[in-house]
Length: 128
Image 1: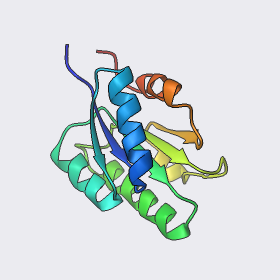
Image 2: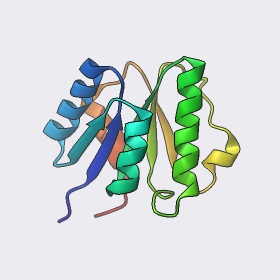
Image 3: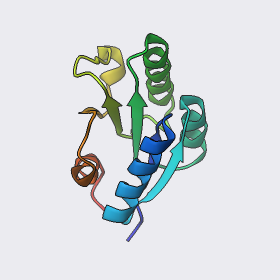
Image 4: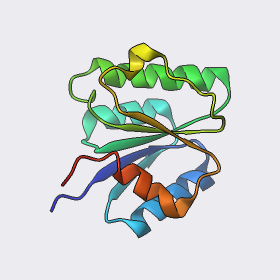
């Protein structure tokens, strides 16, 4: 059985550690973390991931950076099928429809339940 690999992009070190801990302790997934969207893009293009967990803040600059990240993944045949789960502060965070084509994009509102997060992510993953 292949181990699922999840990329977590979260700038807050405490939250990043919590996400990694709850995903590794409650699953047998390999969890790779990074603090930046740029680092996440580099990892996504150089490693294989079954899903990406991307934290999006309320700052416009951060939202724009995240949308650019999603666009870059969408434009590349090697990454366009990776499901993305957005961790957002507000339910109103919208993804432009052109970025949703051929993408599996879901949102989780902060604060989230660490005990059920792995279940939400597992629902996005292709069957083993």
